[in-house]
Image (tube, rainbow, N blue to C red; front, side):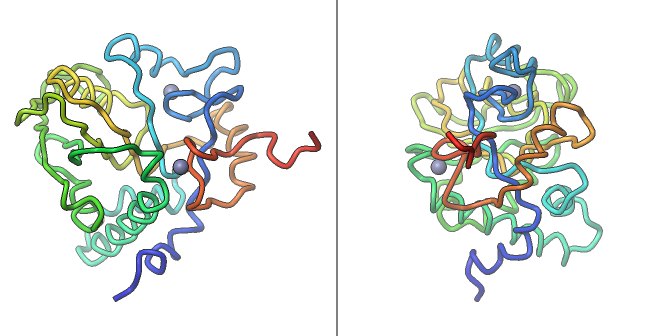
Length: 243
Ligand SMILES: [Zn+2]
Ligand SMILES: [Zn+2]
């Protein structure tokens, strides 16, 4: 039986460190690229106004078309069940290694909740393979089909059980602009849950977009390291500088 560290090896070339908040051009909430004159990107600003602050904890940046991105699509959509299984296992290894190193960065939680799409809960295939999370996995959301995937509205999700006062670790696969995750977080908060994380496997980045291109220019020159995350030691643009 291979260990998580061994299973992760083929995925490593696709992993990109996540920039720390609090530096110019990095959104303090989602860690994507933003206008250097602001602390956050526009979608996060709107989300914070609507549902309160949500500090996303991405495990890696996910560059459009690259290896991690292909896993994050393929684990749910590849035609071959064998490929889906192999990709799910690698993603589970990544989550497992990350949680092992960053429990205190994630914070204490009572349960693990994933974000469903109408008709399926893709990321469940990953959570069910992560030993440190599966014991606490207690689904709480149903996608209602209301609204579109680009809208932040809490009625896109129905909360299926009592979560009042519960510290809920929210886990999702990919974060792009966030309306789905923010809607899920908003619905859970309205039901009284305390949000932990949310942990997302990949912070999606379009390398062709100017601000992202600049961000990636320095991020991709650094190795992804399981000992560091954007909360405890995120990548900094000036790392290794003379001062
Ligand atoms: Zn943002
Ligand atoms: Zn950390």
